[in-house]
Image (cartoon, rainbow, N blue to C red; front, top):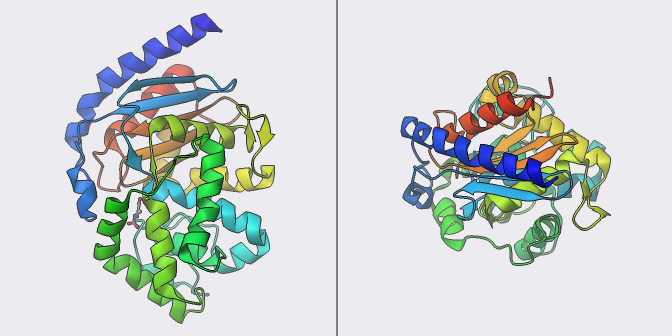
Length: 312
Ligand code: GLN
């Protein structure tokens, strides 16, 4: 009710204030030049409650790009288009323990398929599964889902970030060509990479990320539109990957310290879904050495402690 909302709002504002200085411990991503321009001291959060109420504090209205958070939504599209069997013949279900852009296990593990869809290699393999005659049509499938889920018909790709990544993505290009040689990717590799760069560059705010997280928390049901936007089974698979691989090779530590299914991105965003309770969207561009938002993780940890949000 109303009292609760006022209380939550106060906690959010106070916790953002107490946590913002954590950003000093991190650095903004610089391997994508356009991301290096972000102001590292930003911190924002939005919470979408079970009844659809949205509460925000800090820099909740600053746009940032989804980056790896988008891997959840390309996976949703691939699962809806092809079903589980097809998808998991081409990408695994296991965490790697390696950085998100690592190439090493692609060669050392047999069969040569990426270990999971949350690392870059796995997400590029998933992008390859999204059908359509042109890159635009393939992207449209992801955009349509995201527009429906966020309720924002204006959602778009940040062209500068997309171009910046496309021009500097030698590592991702190497991953993609390796996948082609292993027959995980077929067709035009550059087009699939292009789709991957574009979906990583979709621009959002924490408000939208909190809504996405809330729909996942409610097993695919959207309280705002009153519609089941994705199959429960697909939501369940995505949330499970968020627990095991969502924070890259810090997923185990995050599970202990925070205990919420979550997915991060190198622009500094985190999408966190507390099953049956709430969705959280966080933005703080200063990253730790594993590529997770330093202040964002700390903020989630504090809220999880205060509100007893851990699923464990
Ligand atoms: N677009 C980024 C990349 O491929 C996404 C990585 C991330 O957010 N960890 O490097």
